[in-house]
Length: 86
Image 1 (cartoon, rainbow, N blue to C red):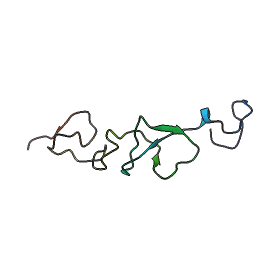
Image 2: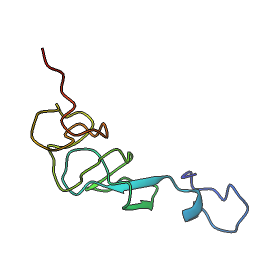
Image 3: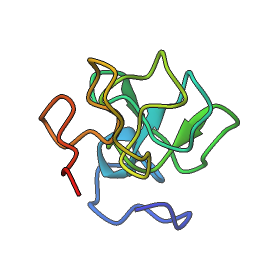
Image 4: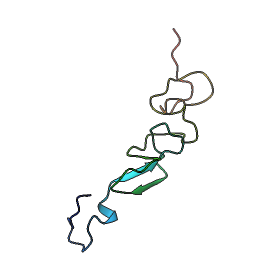
């Protein structure tokens, strides 16, 4: 926990094991890469608190994106081009 105290009596204040994980957001879309994380009390520029990005190389691919027919999983649903026909 990031509170300036030694909560687990380890002799270390805010030791790394008790810090929350943050995830790198390489494409700047507000969603982090689940495979690139670190523990930190602070969210630095380029890092976010969620690991929901399925493609951190493309800012147009994230859970809030609109799925379009383009051969990609734009909205990170796990299915490519899962658009419904009207």
